[in-house]
Image (cartoon, rainbow, N blue to C red; front, side):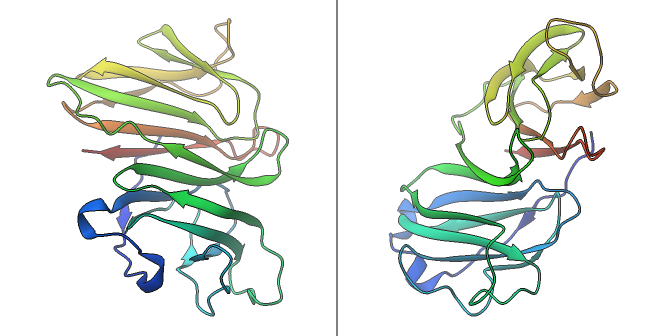
Length: 221
């Protein structure tokens, strides 16, 4: 697994941002489809598609952090450079409601059948106890069910697009994805150093059949 450098982009949405600053929510937009650069357009629900992208040239494995007030949006994702007024979106999420004062992750990824889709996760952003870290594992890959082992012990078994959270000691722990209820490895073992009080999001992405199965690892304090 490779650590993704988180790109933080604070966007002044104008009419998109409807709430007061103290009610703003944090939204992470994650690109989990390998090999495809896209443009992301966000607009008020039912409104016109903007003429310029909200997130242009969005690269695979990139993470963009957006601070935005409570509102309801239409989110459309097009192939990079496509004309949003005439092209068909690769993915669209219409009527996505962003409540006030929450943290969400919106992931563009492949479904269990291999089709482009998007999933919205509400993150547990409660404080993590000192000496511990929280790991959220999210299956967003075109792949069969996977199981996470930590230090060789089974912890979570997931299918696309389900997720699971666990608390782990703030230390170095060997993690691996395996076929559920077996010792057959899907990935090599990766020893990760978990920092105290930090939240980690692990996304399985890509396609096992297509040879693009990969990971995104995001750390958030």
